[in-house]
Image 1: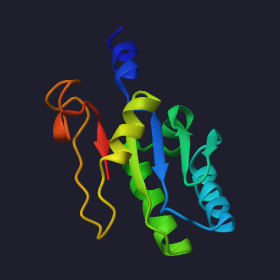
Image 2: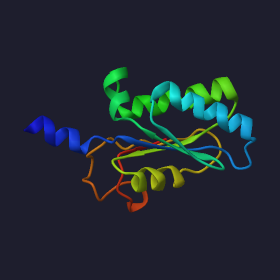
Image 3: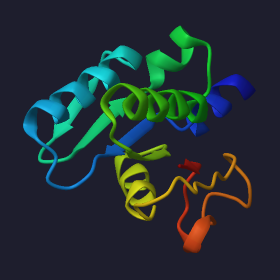
Length: 131
């Protein structure tokens, strides 16, 4: 029973925001990078994507934070674009998290899941992790 409760609290949605005015070809390449982590990727043109992580967490044997770090490093090294990633239990929470990250130099914070309860987080928003 405890395993089922823990699984319900796992952050399993990743919202990826790319830079504004990104060329379509580069955006498609960014989507391909997301598809290397998870088979369930939804493009949100012009510059965002949703990635479902439930299966990817088991497959890669990593947590959501680690997968976000991997994606960010891959897009930066392979494509030269810095993405903002929000991770949460729902699409709304993940999108809010990625929207709260300032564009610019990589100065990312991370809040471990469950720290301070579901209703707390950076700037008062409830979410598990952000980069």
